[in-house]
Amino acid sequence: MAILVTGGAGYIGSHTVVELLAQGEDVVIVDNLCNSHPVSIDRVEQICQRRPIFYQADIRDKNALIEVFSKHSFTSVIHFAGLKAVGESTTIPLHYYQNNVAGTLVLCEVMAEHGVKNLVFSSSATVYGDPHTVPIVESFPTGATNPYGRSKLIVEEMLGDLYKSDNEWNIALLRYFNPVGAHKSGLIGEDPNGIPNNLIPYITQVAVGRLAQLSVFGDDYNTVDGTGVRDYIHVVDLAKGHLKALAKLDAKAGLVTYNLGTGQGYSVLEMLNAFEKVSGKTIAYQISPRRPGDIAACYSDPSLAKQELNWQAELNLDDMAEDSWRWQQGNPNGFAS
Ligand code: NAD
Ligand code: WQD
Image (cartoon, rainbow, N blue to C red; front, side, top):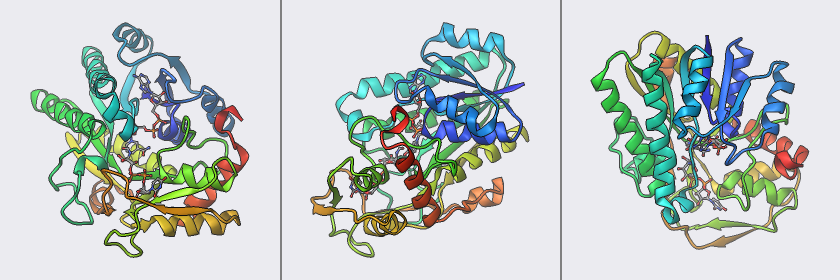
């Protein structure tokens, strides 16, 4: 019996595959490589001394998925495959709905047809929109502010309907906060295409000399130093959360929803200082206008995951900065280095 990981060549997927292999699981990856590099799979093998089975396929290609399901017996599916750039989603919304919503729909159809009914879904803190207060608990109202976020909410609702129609499904909706960091080996990490949208890859690319300076989007928020506050979580902690979620599903959990965050918020300038400390570099920055759609502060109350999954983040800000920096320094141009 194996675990199917869609999007397993990507950033969070590859780190989760490492944890699964380390636990002795058999892993099959389906990824179309639209936002990842096949070298990530070689690196996973290098770390684990075991290679996951890999199919380069699109989850919207039903025949390709049926073929994969006919070759392997799966206990569960961890579903990372999807597009994730908020800005891009506003310019090509149909592509986002096609990939994220239709892709999940096809996947669930094939799972149902093969009697595989345990699913872990990559949701996002973005489904909380602009929360009325922080920390955020799972019962807060949801509401998307962009097509990417809406695609996640639609999938959450679709999976809720699926569960209501058939209680044999066990579904974990994991709402990630801001994943950062990299595997301790420095062999896998985040490798964004083009200019990064997210803060940490931008900071590390300035530190390594690939980009000239960081724009800090706004210093007039009602936060500790005026810059935006987020709940950064180490990707290895996040990966481990998926193994705990799988165990919960094996125990017939039904439909469950968890925040995966640390519960601790850091500002943009606090992150910048942490990276300056570990890299020993001065990271040039300028204060720029607020980025449209950004909110002042977003951090989780992760206590439900602690109670019900026996999971909590263990790595701290220094680990996040050191590990991101080690990955960036060793791979200045990502997997293509
Ligand atoms: P990523 O882009 O590194 O990984 C996604 C992987 O899915 C890539 O390898 C890509 O090639 C693959 N993929 C995309 N569409 C596909 C398709 N139709 N068929 C097959 N493969 C496809 O992104 P990530 O950061 O690892 O994110 C993984 C999941 O977590 C995504 O669903 C994302 O929306 C969600 N998420 C990410 C963050 C974040 O900040 N990184 C936060 C919250 C939620
Ligand atoms: C963090 C902070 C910015 C870049 C996004 C998605 C969210 C989720 C995680 C997928 C903010 C500031 C950033 C820069 C900056 N992804 N910043 N200069 O916006 O919290 O979340 O990724 O689900 O859905 O929206 O993350 O890393 O872009 O920004 O000052 O060049 O850094 O304003 O305060 P965000 P981020």
